[in-house]
Amino acid sequence: MGKSKNKITTVLISGQAGEGVKEAGIIFGKLLSLSGQEVFVTTELPSLIKGGYIFSRISFSQEKVFSDYGNPCLKIDLEKELILFGQKSFHLPMKKLVEQAKAPPITKNSVALGALCYYFGLEFEKLKKIFEKTFKEKAQINIELAKKGYEYLKNLKLPTRGLLKSKAIGLPAGGLIDGNEALALGLVKAGLQTYFAYPMTPATSILHFLAKKQKEFGLKTVQPENEIAAVQMTLGSAFAGFRSACGTSGGGFDLMQETCSLAGMSEVPLLVIVSQRMGPSTGVPTHTSQSDLQLVRFSGHGEFLRIILAPGDPEEAYLLGAEALNLAWKYRSLVIVLLDKHLSESLATSFLDFSKISAKIGLASGRKIEEKKGLVFPGMKNVVVKAASYEHDEKGISTEDPLVIKKMQEKRFKKLQFLLKEQKSKETVKVYGDKKSKNIIICWGSVKGAVLESLKHLKKPAKVVQPLWLEPLDTGKIKSYLKGAKKIIDVEGNITAQLSSLIREKTGIEIKNKILKYDSRPFEPMELAKKINHFLI
Image (cartoon, rainbow, N blue to C red; front, top):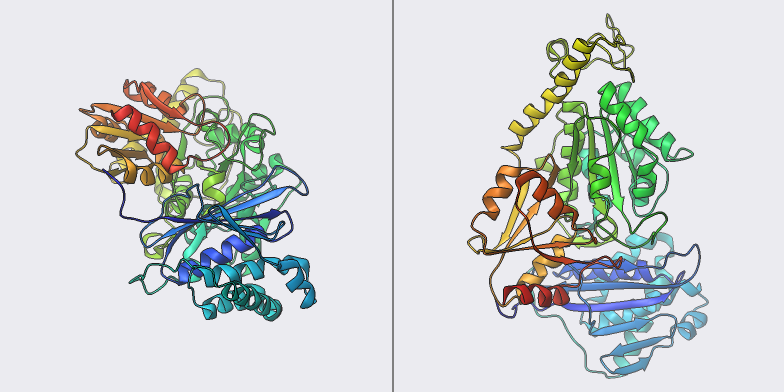
């Protein structure tokens, strides 16, 4: 495909924990967004309770940016008070300027933001407006320090790197959003009423966002004592008739297994958000991975319907979050939305189409009495509601009769027939790139971003196939998109190629070419392009 005409610029902001590195990256991203740029922001922090170096990487361009890039053109170190332009470095006296203004030490990041504003030729007034919205009554001191950083860099008379003129009118600051917040908004749009979670990185910010907005959204958020309590309360809330969800990561989801199985037997809707981090055990809590696909596929014991959706960017997280809640209630089953740290906590320029989502309940239970009367809940007139962990008949009475057991197993799995039929009208798989190419790259989750960026640097055209529904896998579409392939390349963030194994299990197609990354860091597009090119030669 040759070199991309889409010029990507990357800036790196670093410093000690507590110096406002993450906030600086977000604010700079918003400033770029308001200036008509497409933006992707990631934050890398150590797995420490306190301290350590933090890095915020901001990649931007006039056109869509799907992932962050390495090799930044400019670096600002808040701790060392240095600005690095390539091999040249300059001192930016942030601490001195803050002390002169008698401001808190954390406001050093405002000085740095002012310098960035000047270097890239951005309008200071836009930065001022972001400060006013972000810091409110504390905005003025941050604005003053940003102005000092702006003027200091200006007085150095260094060559600047103004942005290419963009035809974009500028995006609203809210257009920059991470996967967790986007998913939370999708849940709310689909009628979420209660959310339960015990804090566990990288799913925690869903809880924080919904707790902060619970009055505005008209919902209830609860942080119980542990993950077992969280999932049990979610199931109990759904049994009582409230659209509910809970969120966690791999270790927390381990503790939820018995409740997942209880949901399968009792047929109470259960939606769990699982954001992956590097394992096993505590692993690397603040870094990313795609190693839990097999875990969620076989969650809980026994045979029952599981639905697994895996978005790859904030817009998909928004749409699939809503779809997951609707599916849980329609099929009265366990539904899992599988995220990862890179998607959960990276911000990207996104437009969430609120017109695409509504709270749809419907019913596909395979149980005639429910299809006639609809969903019933405790407290409703003239109904008796039961939810049994024991095998039971259609009236909820426990049984050991083999004929009834067989009938109930078949009844529960009848839902799968309805679901597979519904799949045909859903966007269960996405295709990008050259759709006629026989060179196919298959990926899932946040890896999609780096793969799409790598397309701009490939020597030969390629088609990208991204399954959104992993359980049940849409085998018909997968087979169709992989048909006639000259070369299939699987790209995943794990060591065992779990998507590749799933495809082989469900379709019989064996993918021999694999690019696997399992060092807890996301793929870097240029590095990934080199590896893909190796297979395409």
